[in-house]
Amino acid sequence: MTTKSTGACAICHETVDKGRMFAHLRSCLEPSDVDGPQPLIQLRVEGGQAKAFWLHLDIKADAKLASLDQFLRDIWLECCGHLSSFTIRKVRYSLIPNDCFPEPGEKTLDVRIDRALGSSRTPFQYEYDYGSTTELRLAVTADRTGPRRRNAVRLLARNTEPQWPCSRPLCSRPATSICAVCVWEGEAYACDRHATRHTCGESESWLPVVNSPRMGVCGYTG
Image 1 (cartoon, helix red, strand yellow):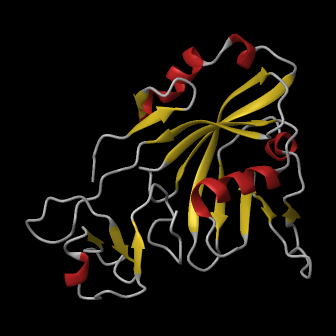
Image 2 (cartoon, rainbow, N blue to C red):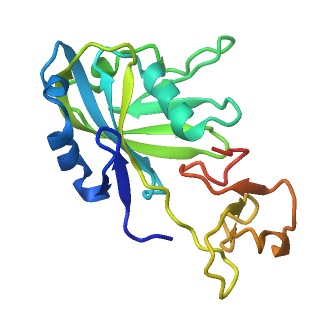
């Protein structure tokens, strides 16, 4: 895999190192993005176990957690309509089906993010799919203001897609497929040439290599 993590700024489209992206965004935002009537919360999101995948985004302070949940599903996660939840300051906020009731102490996603976070702005977690779970970690990087807009969430930056090498010995080609059966055991990646020679063969266990921490899990195809 590519060891140096970079990403594309969604404002100027420049490629920037992961560790420098926040400072880059601070200098790249337009004056109207930091001085307007709309309170915003700026967030960094990364895979809980797959830190090569990361995002920077901002969200209206009065937006519901449901809006953030939908954004994360759309850009990174949605495959089979699984349940999901945030854990913020030890409180669980969950997507609860209409025919179910919350567990004791559990709340729905119909809560403003600024009220869920409170004044402490501590890092928090997100889970998608309680079976084959994809975990994300989120942290507030800034509280600022901006212009009023229609969309609750805006993407500011996203990691460049990592390059995963084919698991076949002596093969230097980039992988294009991942075996969902072998993903936890190594040797799961295959280039176009070697996918047909993998021990699992040509079966429905193959999923595409994509730019998401959900890669290789369940039926996720990007």
